[in-house]
Length: 280
Figure 1 (cartoon, rainbow, N blue to C red):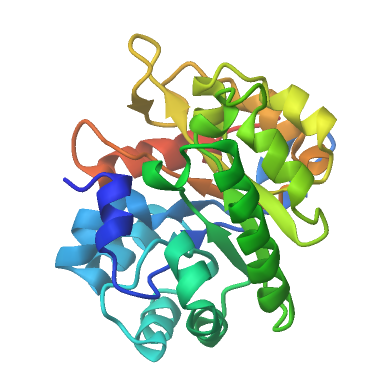
Figure 2: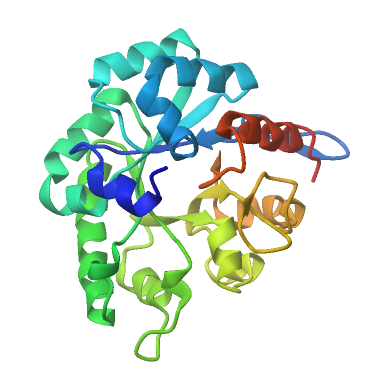
């Protein structure tokens, strides 16, 4: 079972990942997610074995949007054909930091060819975050990448974990990234699990940085040990968070579960069913 670190280290050059755009359907009494998306990292092992078959199963669960985290040696045209076959949208993709630094033109070309609307830097390796100055260097990379993607009409963002909220040299790396990047170019794909794991309040983050989030990773936390859980079966109350999505600026919403106790597709069904029935 690959973890995110090893996955990103071994992914094919140009591999990117991402996905779920959501709009709110409004009624007189409640709002619901009209579209629910999934980050395909959740089913990375299944995708490696059966790319098309796994996407077909994701669509059969009811998901309408996907966020890629690698293309498994498929060409942009092959990816587009499978998405069209199963009527899936792929608004977002994860582009590793190394690709942004070393293969930016290729990353932009691939992202545009497939038709993604959003590119996300998903992770910073431990060797790349030993001191605060490392984050200053990353901010410069993010600004440059965001400007390149903007030229072809693609939005750009950064995906958090918990380590960005761990003080370093008296400052939070996340605060530095937010301050050093252009808010009009670099948005945040806020992982609701990881910010909670870091003992930060997502609602306070929305209020402090209104409009800065472009997307949410909708991921739950086990009540007993803090591990990953199916959405709705853990300790995170998603209703108030989703209700403030407009304040946050989020317009894409991706279910993700880094590790699943059983079959990942079973976990994804549980999460989908919970969100489909959720009013807020």
